[in-house]
Amino acid sequence: MNAHIRVPTAVSRAGAVSALTVAAVGGPVAGPGIPQQAEAASAAAKALQVAASKKGAPYTYGAAGPNRFDCSGLTQYAYKRAGKRLPRTAAAQYNRTRRIKAASRHGGDLVFFHSGSSVYHVGLYAGRGRIWHAPKPGTVVRLERIWTKKVWYGKVR
Image (cartoon, rainbow, N blue to C red; front, side, top):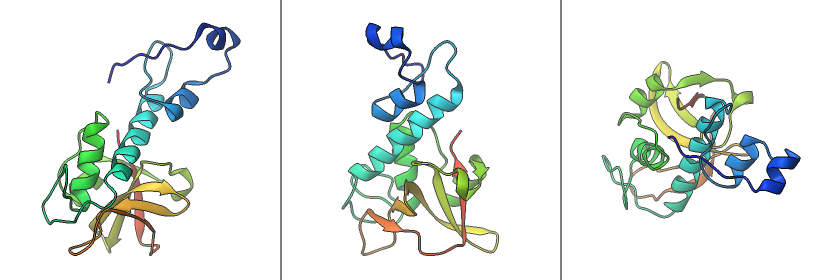
């Protein structure tokens, strides 16, 4: 992603807006002196918006959008629309992310559900202990509370 944002002259003179604030209110941030973390944060925020926009889309095993999804298909689709590439399965996505602690999670980070060392489900962290995900056959993409402590968190690079 190599987009640039123009900050109104009055704001830039005042220095009142940080790159992360700009990213939170609209779009990607990149440019001289702006860390890559800001760009990653804006991609995560965009991916979260994309996932939320798919509310109500039916779960279909193996589907990766734009109108039907399985869990990893939703995360892959959302991040693709945000300019980041993810592999297709939840386990492969886990292997591609940077591990983070629960205290460091932010909106758009991936939440991996596991049994032992096997990842079996993924969603996008939405804040307040909730995720956007495509749960299982017979359901739709929805916002739901994380129902177990057996989760790992990953930040998309």
